[in-house]
Length: 85
Image 1 (tube, one colour):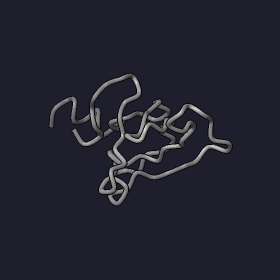
Image 2: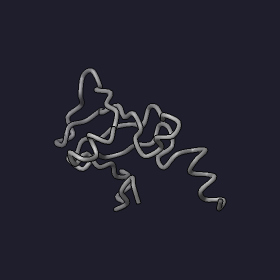
Image 3: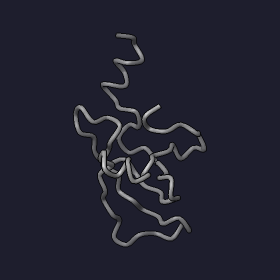
Image 4: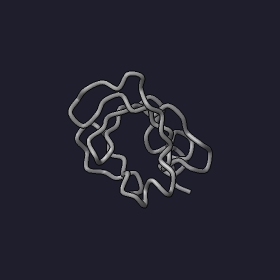
C-alpha cells in the first residue's frame, strides 16, 4: 500500500469540513465520514445553485443510489476531480 493510499484511508478523499460543490451547483461542507465509505461522505448543503443560503442547512449522505442518480461531488476550489477518481 502506498503512502497516498494510507493517507486517503485515514483522512478520506475530502477531509472533514472541506468546502465542496455537488454537480448540480449546490455547495456544502463535509460533516461526517463513514468508515469504509470514504467516497460517500455526509455533506451539509449550505447554498443552492444560485448561491442562496439554505435555512436551515440540509444534511445529505452521498450513497451509492445518489451516485447512480448523478450526485457527483466536486472539490469547490475549481478542481475537476470526481470523488471516485
